[in-house]
Length: 191
Image 1 (cartoon, one colour):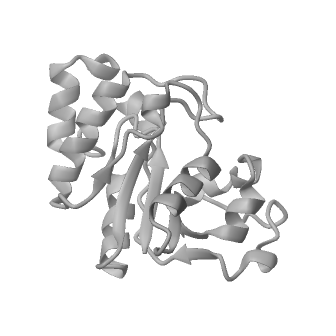
Image 2 (tube, rainbow, N blue to C red):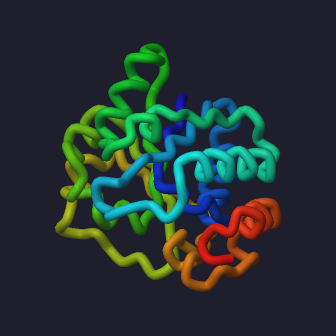
Image 3 (cartoon, rainbow, N blue to C red):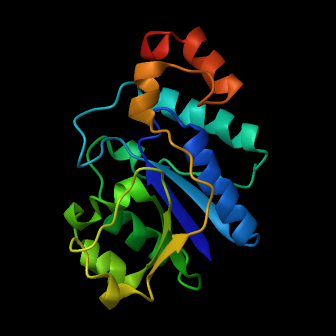
């Protein structure tokens, strides 16, 4: 089993950590791969360079005490928008004997129906949706009954933080100390 967790990670925060730690506790033998994107198809731009994102993800992995987490430059090295379906197909080809799971926050699952080939993702892969406070029902957006054997809502602790919220508040409570220090040392996000 391989868990693919993609995103902007601009910056990586406690909410991301909670997803990875919950996955590890539920699937201790599962492989975890972080896939930072260069540019999300649903967002306009990133706030820091890809090099800073990669450096923060390495600190993040160390802070979690999970050195086995792989950080891939697959999407970030393309220097253009990437699509989850292409990334999942890449890893399916690379690991043909393993089952591929997409890890996604409930907030992102709300716009999942806007993703390129979301229906193909739901047909071919399993999706683990991690709960977030304030997220309401997605009824009507995706025919969940059709994919109920592919979409699993995880019973995780809900953490109410997003990268965009953090960039407004700049609180050290929402990111690890080492990431906060890195942001200060490199004058990221106006720190």
